[in-house]
Structures are given as structure tokens and as C-alpha cells.
Image (cartoon, rainbow, N blue to C red):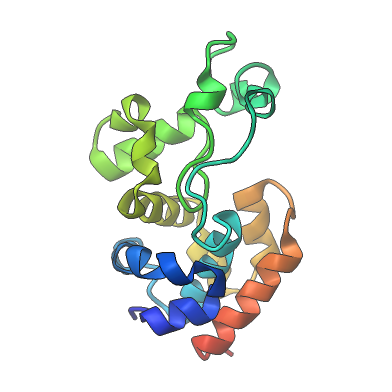
Length: 185
């Protein structure tokens, strides 16, 4: 199933001006990563809608101080960033519609999408609509989120994406709207 511009705008009304820019890339990514069933699409769009501020942001916001949490310490190590304060936090900040974060995730995503490590050299590629969508769909597929969407396990999906339940109310609201627009029961 492909989604239409009208459906995307109904689900993510805040994306009006950007919806047409993202629609072809979204549809291609949905097909490539087997998200093309209404239940899966509804859950996916709700999650990327929240993570990207309804397609407004493809790069994590935050000051150098905020992003330093990705540069050194436990979180940085978990993300595969170097232990030194060398700017990994800034370089491998969240990007794409699901906010791929950290050197380890950039490398895995790069190998899946390109067959090489180009995202380590050009992390800004994930800010382009095609790669913002492809990276989100790759993350979704590689983390088993299709199967969770099939079982309506939305809070588990949220935890896998976010590490917690940050923004759950907004995500649930978007999911409800997506299910209504896509006629998911």
C-alpha cells in the first residue's frame, strides 16, 4: 500500500508544506522495508511524526552542552562513540526521521543502505528526505518493529525507538489519527 499526500497531511497536519517533499521517499522506504501494510504504516507514521516534529526536524536539536552526553561517558560508549571529548556527540547526533544516533548506529545504517561506511564521513546525508526516510525505515525493520506493529504493541515500539516513553501522549494521538485515516481497526 502506498500512502497519498492527502492521507499524509491528515495524519501529520503540521507537515503540510513538507509532506510533498517527503511523500515519494516515504513510500519507497515503506515498500523497501516491508512496512506497506496499513497497521504498520499507522504505527510507523505516528512514531516518525513524533520523532521529527511532523517532518519538521531531520537533525536533533540541542546545544553543544546537551549533545556532549553523546561525546563521553556511558551513553557515548553505548552508542559506539569514542571515549575522548572529540566531537562525536555533535557529529553523530540524531538524524533522520527516527533520529539515528551514535557512531555504531550510523555505521550499521550506512552498511545497510549503502554497503559502505559513507555515513561516518557524511552524516548529513541523513538530513536529506530520501535518506531520512530510508534510515527510519531501516531502523524500524532491523529492530523488529513490523512484528510489534502487527500485534498493536505501540508502547514497546516507543521504548525501542526512544529508550523510554517520552512523548507517548503525542505518539498515541498521531497513531489514533493514522489508524482512522488508514482504516485500521
